Every structure is written in structure tokens, then in C-alpha cells.
Image (cartoon, rainbow, N blue to C red; front, side, top):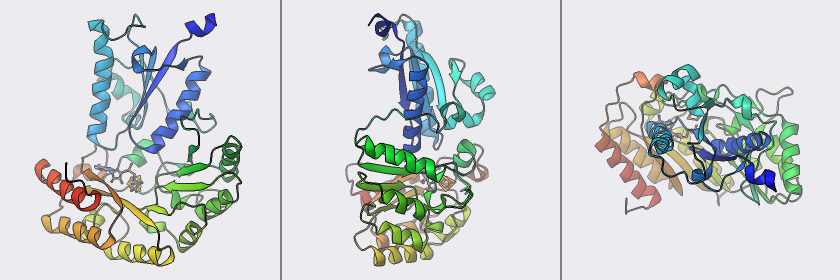
Length: 356
Ligand code: SAM
Ligand code: SF4
């Protein structure tokens, strides 16, 4: 009991996507192993781990703001009622792509940097949900879409072993988890790097056999390697009839500049094919507005595509130039006001949000 009272406490603040949330569940294990217990709030933590996102500038700015806030309280001597000193600040995640030397100069307040090797898949996650679990099946990406930091921040595509994933899901079923979401930047290409080679559809079929698991979802798919075989495996009864298929733009010139490997026509024919096979399927997507060179006509092509598809939901982002990516060299020539207008048009069209 006495020991418990003196145990140091950690708090993890996670930015960004589900992959980061899953990483944070392993970072939690790392801190438990280091002898810490979870703090109820950031205010009572001895160590604050910030799991960062670098996909858009705004996400990075939120990290800078949080670090400033945490450390400013030190000089003001307010806010930390349980800790006499400011918490130790630890940085993890996609912003590590800048390298520790650069980050140390920019953020001297950071006490420690965690690299992915520190929270590898060997660490059993401490899950925050009781019936649903995130299960990463691969790391990284090989696609190099010109706007995107992921291949630089998370490295090249690396699949987790087939048996390791099956073993984890069986364990989850035994622990009472009924729903799982398989995670990867491009789940359709799962297994291409494994020996013997495995397919994503093999994984879906094998997980489908596991008793106790009632619902299987996955994110993210890409339009260029969503095979007929995968579409057939989605028909299995436990597979969620929802497909998240990022289109990014409905204009062929912009798609080419983005290094997306399909045309609007190809994307539409893929959607028709999927709907023919699985009529009840729900569709969601990601779209970037205001990519360099996106004229009003090019944007109208995106609007047209969206009207044709009738997405159930869309995650719409205003283009944000990211240092180190190929598109960073392109002129960011759509004004912030115009990006906002285009964003609003699509929000209202797809997400029916008239209040924004
Ligand atoms: N792997 C997925 C794919 O291929 O679409 C998505 C990964 S990315 C982390 C998530 C979303 O962030 C992208 O689909 C894109 O819409 C958005 N995104 C990525 N880079 C961006 C940038 N520089 N500016 C604005 N949005 C961006
Ligand atoms: Fe980024 Fe493209 Fe890879 Fe998705 S497929 S993570 S958008 S590079």
C-alpha cells in the first residue's frame, strides 16, 4: 500500500490516427514496466508522454502548444497541486521524423524521446476499451503520395507475422473482446513482404474462424490494390460492411500530382463493382482540398465524383504543405479562404453539416 502511494504516475496524450492510439496502448505497457501507474489526469502526472502526429501542420502546432503549457506552469508554479515540479516531458510518434538533434534544439524542454523500437509489437498493449480492440497488422507505407509524411515518419511497409496476429486475436477472444479493427496504412497490401507470402484476404478468412470474435473491421484500404479476392472476403458474415476508401481528389491531373495510382473513372468503376457484390456496403473516404494547382474546375470534379458515389462519410482536410514531402516543393497556390470554402462545400454535401 505504501509503495502504491509513492509510485510515480504517467499520462499519455495521443494526437492523430488510430495507429497512434494503438501505439499509445503499448507505450502504456512500457511505463507500467518502468514502474509507473496511470495518472487520472495530466495535472497529476510525473511524466507526460506526447504521442505526436505530423500529418498536418496544425497537429504539430498543438504539440508545441501543449509542451509550452506544461512547462510554463513550472515557472508560474500553478496547476500542479500534487507535483512540486513540472512533469517530465517525453516525445514519441511521427514528429520523431525530424530527428532527435533537430528536435532537441527546437524543444529543449523535452526530457526524453521514444523511438518505435521502444514500444515494438513485442509489448502487450494495455487496452483502454473492454470489448473492442485495435490490432495493428503492419507498419509504414511504400506509396509516397506526394503530400504525405507517413513513409518518412513510419518507414517502409512491414507486415506483422500472420501467426502472431492470429495468436493475438485468439487471446483477445478469450479475454472477452468481441470486436476488432485491423490497422495499417494500406491493409490491402498486407503480407506482400512475408515469406511465405500471405494475402490480406487470408488474414480476414482466418480471423473470421475465431470463436468469440463477432465483428471485424479494417482501416485503411487503398483503391489501387483492393482485389476481387478482398471484396469476396468482405462478404463473410462477421466482416463489417463498411469500407473506408480514400479518394483524395476527383480530378485526374491532381490525382497524378498526388501520385495516387488511379483515375476518377477507375475509382468510380471500383465502387460500382463493390456495390454490385455487396449492395449494403457503407462507404467513407478521405479528401484533400486545395492541393497545389487545384483549380476551381478541378475541385468541381471532386464535387462531381462525390455526388456520383454518395459517400456516407468523409474526412475532409485542407492541404497542409509538409517539409520533406515531394509536394512541399509545389507552390501552395490555393488561398486559405478558398481552401476553407471548398472544405465547407464538401462538408455540407457529404457530412450534412450546415452549422460549420
Ligand atoms: N493511408 C491512407 C491513405 O492512403 O489514404 C491515409 C493516411 S494519412 C495519415 C490520413 C489522411 O490525412 C489522408 O488520407 C489525407 O487525406 C490526409 N493528409 C495526409 N497528408 C496531408 C497533408 N499534407 N495535408 C492535408 N491532409 C493530409
Ligand atoms: Fe500516406 Fe499515401 Fe501511404 Fe496513405 S498511401 S499513408 S496517403 S503515402
